[in-house]
Image 1 (cartoon, helix red, strand yellow):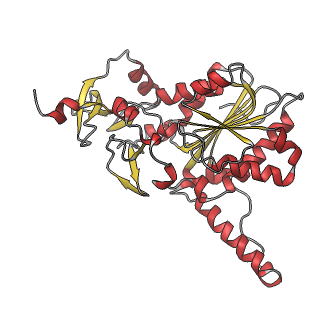
Image 2: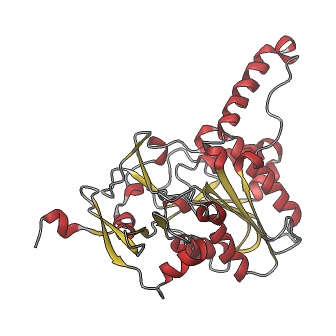
Image 3: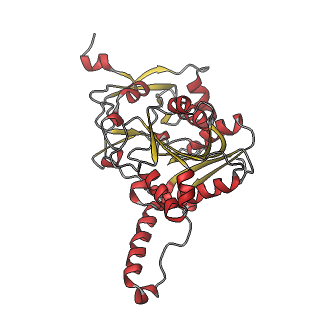
Length: 345
């Protein structure tokens, strides 16, 4: 029969989905995100909100929804920025955070909190859809997906894992007609070593975007493109885990945050192919946050305190744009309905 550990071995997809990390941990305690590093991401998203406001027609309420809102910092930053410049608009917006954790302490009362798993929560609370802006910042990378590996005979097998020890083994071969194999052949082929099957992320993002009647949906995450995958840039796969701010061995026992890069081009395609009047763009974060950052050197003499404050802020923003850090984040944007901006993929 084997050991207890051997009997516990199961597909990574199942073990990852059941490890329940986020019910017991705050992500900021285990890894840095561009939201926690700098409010500049909130700055950019606030500009997007104003562009959505200008684009939408009619007097129907505008909603800002953060899927996987964590501690609510991103929504809070955006709300504060809009309050500072246009109180009437800020008060007219329906601010909503969605997360599996309960409402964070100290969250502004202007921000509503829907607890549960998206997109199911959206189906329950907004069955008729929303107008406005839906955000998913580092949400898709936490959605469990199958992990596969090519064996010595180049047969693609699902990777299994012991949820107690993290020891891995190769499970059954994927059937040629399976959805997992069909996804791989379209988006990650050939599989030279390991890969993650992004189909669950595609479907989740499609369901979220389906709730947008008119407005914009943006997903921000570590991602990769089909060209990079075909070139073998991610031949070792991207499955990783973090605990206490450090990268650790992935063990799906609930003690660490498990994540994998997102095939955002596949997420983009499933939404674009099923929606009419939708413009889609994918951009690297370092290109999205492109505005001049450094303060004028002359201000060091005329207003040294302001100069130092702006310099400190610029250093944080440069961190968000690091090529080998958050700067490699990808922004997937869908403008849905109404007068559109950008170009289709």
